[in-house]
Length: 127
Image: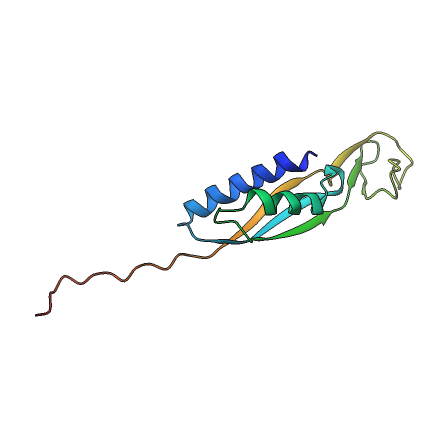
């Protein structure tokens, strides 16, 4: 259920940046989702389809790039990806670890179609 406020945030950020870029239709949204963030792609897509309706982001395609869990052993300094959910250093067997990656959730990029500019009027008048 935490996907709804996350999706609302993504929409707000995308709309703000699209407006700053000169407006236009948002066609693609690229998200980075760490395994520890517990965000479910299908839930984000479900909410996106509802809340983006009647906005410049309606119909935008969501792209999810998933990042693995990465841990750092504070005993030996080794960085490793845990197997399963075992948080024991693969190099020294240490249990003093910190999360070094895989907890991120961010909007990485937005594709915005630029609105076509109206042709400029010339200063001369034709008879």
